[in-house]
Image (cartoon, rainbow, N blue to C red; front, side, top):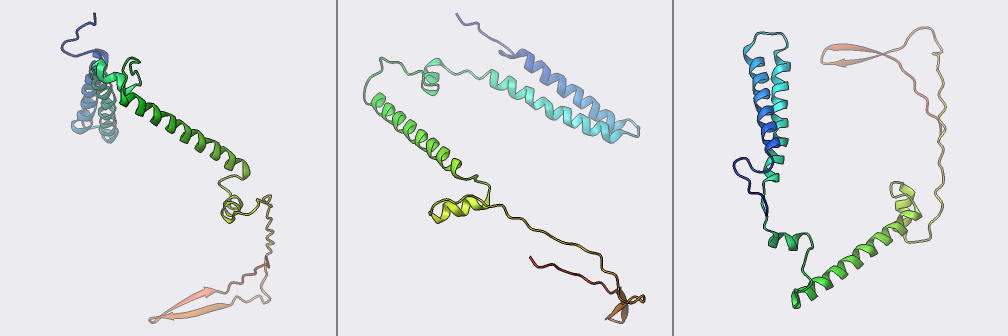
Length: 180
């Protein structure tokens, strides 16, 4: 015989933890609002976070007290009785076989495709989209040479641009690019 739960239900511990978190969070929040301390904002945020965390315990308490009759539970978790015959069990068996075939086919095709080239690389995507034979990905190296350029003259060159009567002086800069 199943015990009969009254009042708070099965998850009494979760209920009291939720209430304790709510009370403690509210006390900390009200301390931050009404007490004149320099860290009042910390108390306000901490109280709000503790109240938010109490929602976890409320959800545990509520979901732990949901009652489902065993007759409804049989179909949801796959506990179909073997003596139930008829057209429904034949159709559901066919659907299960078809579903397992499709999922295993998708699984094997994904394993086959992932072995050819990594999915995150550009060469793997372009090789698969062309439909031709897959080539080994080649490594590309790019060398960049950087050098300091000294001005030919000792006097700095300034470019002057006029913007609505305001002269702005900018130093002359030189850039050098290397062929790739």
